[in-house]
Structures are given as C-alpha cells and as structure tokens.
Length: 462
Ligand code: PHE
Image (tube, rainbow, N blue to C red):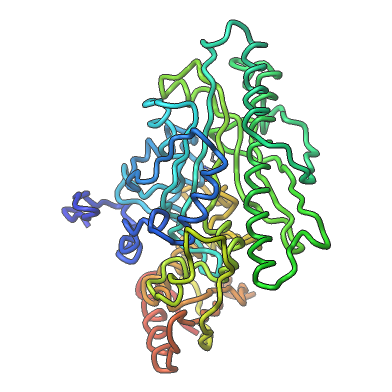
C-alpha cells in the first residue's frame, strides 16, 4: 500500500510492507486505563508504586516508539523472534506499538533525574484470544541504580546497596524458593567486564527482597478482600510462597521470573534482572549499576479483585466501573450477570503451498503476555515466515468480532496422509460481557470470519 499513511494521535506515519496494525487495535490507543480514576488498573498501579518510595513515576509516555527504542537499544539480536511481524504491531518498518515498557529504559536512564523510577503504560502484542489474553495490556517497569562514582571502593558500593535494602525493605516471613545459582555461564553470565560477583549478588539480593516485599503487599491486600467477601483467604490452609526461576532477557543478566503459589498453581508474575551494562552505556550512564523488573498489571489486578475476564478492563459499563474506589480497601469484583456463550467451529484446509501452520503456545497461567511480562514464544526466523500463523487468525477474529469473542481454541489439526495437506479446526466462542448475543448475531459474525479467512489466507473451508 504505497503512498498511504496512518494517523495516530494526530501524527501521520507512512505505511509500508511492514504495516500490520489494525483499526481495532488503534481504537484502544490513548484510553490510558492505568491513569483513569478508580479504574482497577490504576488501583493496582498505585498499590505497587507505594512499595517503591522516592521512585519517579512515569505514567504517560506515548506508545508509538521506534524499532531502535523497543529492540535495538535493549540488545535484541537482529533475528530475535520478538521482532517478528506475527508477534508485534508495526506501524511501518521503523515504527511500532511498544511491546513492553522496557522500550523507554534507555531514554529515562539518559535523562536520569533520580536513582529509581517506574514506567506504567499500555503495551501491544499479537496473541491468542482467551479470558487472560488481550492484544493491549499494561505493564509496569521498575528500575533502581547506584552511581559507582559516589563510592571510593567496590565494598563501599556493596555496603550502600545492603544498607538501602535494610532501610527500605521490611522483613517478611514469606516462604521463598530460590534453588538456582545466580549465574549460568551461557544463559545468565556474570557481566565480568563490568561487575564483580559480589556486586552483582548485592544488586540481585536487593532486587529479590524488594520484589518479595511487593508480592507480600499485593497478596495481603488480596487476602483481605477475599476475607471481606466471606471467602477463605488463600493463605489459610497453605502459607503464601514464591519461587525464583531462571529466565533470559536481552536487557538483563542474570535474569529471573518470580512465580507465586496461588490457589494450587505457580503463577508467573514478573521478569527481572541485573541491568545489562552496555544498555546503561548507551544511555550515557556507564558508571551506574542496578536492577530492573517488568510486571503485567492485568494479571495482578485479576487476582487482586477476582476479575474473571481480561476484556472487562476495557468496559465502559458502569456496572463494572462503579465497583472500584481508590479511597476504599480493595473489594472483590461482583459479576453483574453472565450472558450465554455461542460456540461456533470453523474447519479449513491450508493452501497447498503452505509450509505448515505455526501455532503459538499459550501458557496455562493467567497473563496477558506470553510470559510474565513476556518472553516470546519460539518461532522460525522471519525469512521463512509461514503462510499461516495462528496470530493472523486471532487478528481476523478480533477485527471482526472485537470484544464479542471470549475464546479461540484449536480443537483439531491433522495432515492428510496422501495429499499432505494440513487441516485445522478452531472453536470460536462468542459471548458478550454486556448483553445476550442472538444466534443470528453470532452466525453473522462467524460467517464474516469464515469469508475473511478465505480472502486473506486462501484457505479452503471444510
Ligand atoms: N521487558 C520484559 C518483558 O516484557 C520484562 C522485564 C523488564 C524483564 C525488566 C527484566 C527487566 O518480557
């Protein structure tokens, strides 16, 4: 589509062969739910911010960023799957909707007006459709650094990091599992050119204790709300426990994910690590060392308030919005009604030329991101981009039926033994949160989706 352009927030961007952002996505741009008064995401954000005193809070950074900001500045390799058009909304080759709040780290470090900061914002990822995944969600980034030049020796720096922890992070009696060594020679090496192991350990310990404290705060509030609603608190028969799991991010080393034992399952809540030193050098802060984390706000808000479906955050229905009040203790969400589900299946043959389907993996845990704050699923590199990617189907469904779809699931997949053709069958569950969909309405949406699949991907309906 040469010559055309997209207008976002009054700004015009030329489109090109990379453009894949849809109007249904852009309709969400600028809603700023995380700063809307009395919104559950705002309440969640403020609760987390309250545990990081003296941090500067950035809450209105625009979501259109460059490929440089979102990937290059953070050390993403050229072939990193996160860059794929099947996962990321591109405005054009150079411009995209940020996939994480980390996109602003280098800019904020460069401006450097305080040691600690948080960034809360809407982020965008192409993904599956179900009750815990939505292509727009919210993250909070947190980072804390120390300036080496303020200390005459490495041991003074370490002593300061430890003193800061004692001063700012209350002791807790949370059960913590942390079975893996801090460093792994390939996956999570010590940044030997820049840190001593003792420095990295001190930063890591400060990071872990700070985030454990945050989790204690969140779950204490969640328990209180449950008790007030007459449920057993989750901690009653089983004490609250968390575990640190080795992770990998291009912008931290070593890196972890934090998981929380919640109602019988390990729930990933965040990603974090010791900040990659070249990143700080790119931000003209080669003398600073520190940590960063990224947490998905919807996931936390869903368990704090007991919100069962991620689409609800976007609701303008007062039966939803009137239930939340910043000035009061957290209260459990009361479903105002449940409308009937209308499941419809669509089965089709992929085009003969197809290299085969790529099915995105959907983790079982409650999140709007592939991983806590979002690692990316493994996929083939871009030069062998398949003819059909599951996220393309998800996009067709979202563009056609919007928030009237609750869930899309692959229910059958096989390859014909003689012809070698691939067949897929998906179950699309239509259900509005605000009204009953008639059979005719569900059929009309489904018919439109079927036609769109034929037109866009050349599939043959079965
Ligand atoms: N940017 C990571 C993600 O979205 C989360 C993260 C932030 C991890 C900061 C480490 C440090 O997946």
